[in-house]
Amino acid sequence: MTDTVEHVEELDFNLARDPSWKSVQAITARGMAARLPRLVVRSLGMAWRADRASVAGLLACQTASGVVQALGLLATTGTITAIIGHGDIGHRLWAAWPSLAVLAGASGVRALFGVVISWLSSRLGPVMAQEAELMMMTAAVNVELAAYDSPGFSDRKEAAEMGVQIGQDIIQEGQDFIAACASLAAGAAVLTAVHPVLLPLLLLAAFPQGIAQVQSAKASYLANLEMIGHRRMLALLRWHTTDKYTADQIRSATMAPFLLDRARRITDRVRDAQRRAFARGARMSLLGSVGGGMALVVVWSAVVWLLASGRVSVALAGTAVFALRSANASVQGLVSVGARMFRTGMYLDDWTKFLDEAGGYQMRRGQVAPKDPQEIRVTGLVYQYEGAKRNALDNVDLTIRRGEVLALVGENGSGKTTLTKLLTGLYLPTGGAVEWDGIDIREMDPVMLWRRIAMVPQEFAHWPLSARENVTQGQGQDAPGAEAALWAALEASGADEVVNRLRSGLRTLLAREWVGGEELSGGQWQRIALARAFYRPAGLLVLDEPTSALDPRAEHRIFTGLRQLATSRAVVLVTHRLTNVTVANRIVVLDQGRIVQSGTFAQLSTQPGLFRELWELQNDRSNDTR
Ligand SMILES: Nc1ncnc2c1ncn2[C@@H]1O[C@H](COP(=O)(O)OP(=O)(O)OP(=O)(O)O)[C@@H](O)[C@H]1O
Figure 1: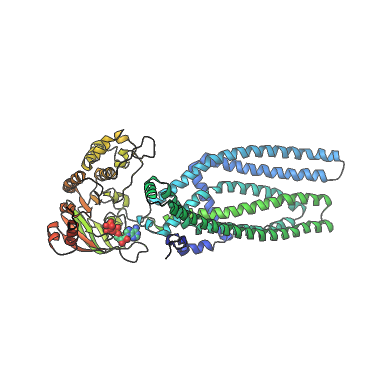
Figure 2: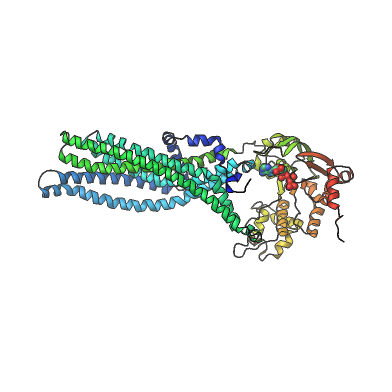
């Protein structure tokens, strides 16, 4: 297989395989018209919660501005009627002045409303954006962790994020909608007064363009949706090419041309998809304009026919001409804002669906608040990652008790990290059960459960926060004895030496990208990550390769302190450095997701089996050059 963008699997449009894709494709203008009020009400509700005064002011001003516009239009037709009527020009102008005064007053008042509306919109926009962003973040942090292993989830999240950005347009669109309705109402009143047949004819004439614009809005939305995987990859590439974290690797591996070429190819594909959508939209608009133009010929012919057949007077026909032009402009405005609302509605739909279903991964667990466990029992445990062909864990039985250090050992990919994520309820089993003192983990309130857990994952976060917040993670600082607990954790992990060398101690920002911030070495960061875990008063401590970056002195300190830590909790240790597992009360050896051995170090290092094999390989010095 060649390594071209065309063959990169992750760029494939995942939603196309998603059942909801079919319903998105099949959505009609009628279907959206039925859904739109609900979506508008939801956005308004969000805006209302965010800033009531601005929403109330905006709605009042928009409605008042619409009414004033309608008055202005009626005044226009009044003026026209007066001017083209019969009689002396002086009298006609005299008759027209009240309408002219209303016209001038209306445009002045509308301008004033316009200023207030744009001021209120500029206040409301950012608050709504903030609210929508926070709702998205809340939904994202409340999904099952397994969601992140599913490409479909990432696509739905991306679509919802676009909904957040584009959904704000609904405020402006609502405004345009009210304005178009008001001016149409004014034009319609005059037209109907001239002859009742004209308005329905005009509305019918708007149909071809309405359909064309809705279809073109749908094509543009679908093109955007189709490119979601590409956009996501582009965002990742942008991050990787511009972030400090990868900057040295890009340079030392001379990867820049390759990465830039990859980015260019992806943007090319996004651009091509957009061009196709634009071309389709343009074709639709052309057809719509031709259809609309032909329909307008019918409308104008009707006016001529009404005049020729004596059904309306010359003066009324003149009024009809102006009213038709104004009503036609309003209808066009309504069609265009309708199509925009249709498109925004589709994006909003993605956003609301994500909020409602959390991308299909909403946590639905019980409400039991667990205590620190005396015993964690695993029976018949099976775990399969979404889309994976094989089980990552297969029929695992295991018991861990408080006061015990249990080591998980095995080759790369044997399932050690996956098992720790199931013991801690980060993943839920696809088969079998994990029980804490007889209570199934599924029945527990997840937040209450995680409060009982301290973890040092293989890859831990380097939070751009102060040293103190990096250890406390924003928790427990107000509890009595918190400061002493913090220093005890720092000392146990060796992070006290790190903190004491920082310019402003615990207050130092650990992010070199900011003025005053400081950067730590890999091992210094690992000490901070250990301090985080030691600081949490947890009944289960999970350490996944906790000392991989530590120097011998620091590593020695951790392992000598581990048994002491285990007196009041259960400790699970994952490591490839087998000398370290001597500290464990029990060692469990995993191979391809199954437990193949279990016992003490003394037993396993003397018995034939995978553990002894790995142990001997780690101690093999046959290539020693001394
Ligand atoms: N997020 C994921 N999505 C799909 N498959 C995964 C995911 N994480 C791990 N796997 C697969 O599950 C299996 C077990 O992985 P796991 O990370 O548990 O192994 P491990 O024993 O901790 O490996 P290592 O020693 O390299 O850390 C591997 O085959 C891996 O490819």
